[in-house]
Length: 301
Image (cartoon, rainbow, N blue to C red):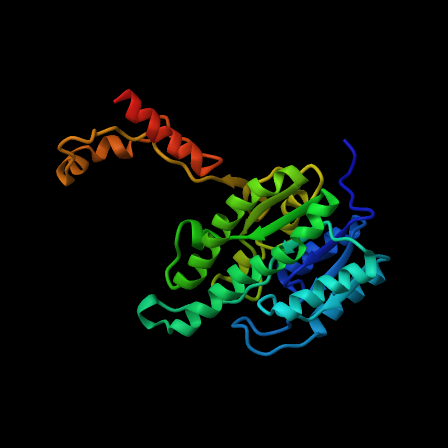
C-alpha cells in the first residue's frame, strides 16, 4: 500500500510548541502538510506566554523543507482562535486538519481544589477544543472534507486521583465528539480522539526517568497522523503509548426489563446481577440505539 501523504493539505495543531503537539506537527509536515503551529507558550499550569516555542517548531519544519507558520493564540480566546483560522486561510486558502492538543494541568484532590482551578482546566481542555472546531467547521463543510483529532485521557474515561477537573474535561470531549461525528458525516468530516500516554512536561514529574524513556511522544504521533488521514475512521477513541495501540469503547449491558407495575427500589437491588451481566453488551453508535433497546424490552416484556 502507498504511504500516507498530506500533499496539498493544511493542518492546524494546537499546543504544538513541545511534547505531543510538536511531534504531530513535525510528522504532518514531513508527509507534505502545510502546518499552523499554535502554542500559547505558557507553563504547565497555563500561566505566562511566549511565541518562542511555536517559532522554534516552525523553524524545524522549514529547515526540513516544509511549510509552516506560527500562532501564539490561546485556544480559549475567541479573537485568538479567529486569528489562527485567518492566518491559515490567508496563507493557504483551506483547512483540512485540526488536531486539538493544547492543555494544562492543575492537579489537586477535589477537597483541596479551588473552583477557579476546576473551571480553568475545563475551559482550556473542553472549550479549548470546542472553539477551534467551531471555527473550522463551516470551512470543512464547504470543502466537503475535514479531519479532526481531539485529545482525551484515561483520567476522563477511567479516573485518576487528583484530576477531577482534567477528567471531567477529557470525558466531556468524548461527549462532544460523539455528536459531531454524526453531524459531520454527510460532509466527509471525520472526528476521532487520541488518548495518549507520553513523556511530556505534563507527565515528567509523575513517572521515573526510565519509564518516561519508553513513553516518547513520537510513539503516539503515528496513531494521531493516521486519524488525520483520508483513510481515518470516525468516532474512534484510540489509546496509544510506548508503541502500543488499542481502541477504547463505551459499552452498555443488555440489562433486564422489570416491568412497570409495582416497580420498586428493591427490585432494582434484587436484579442487580442481571443488570450488570456483561453478556451481550454493546457499544452503541448513537443515543437512539440505546432508546431502541428500551423500547424493544418494553414490547418484549
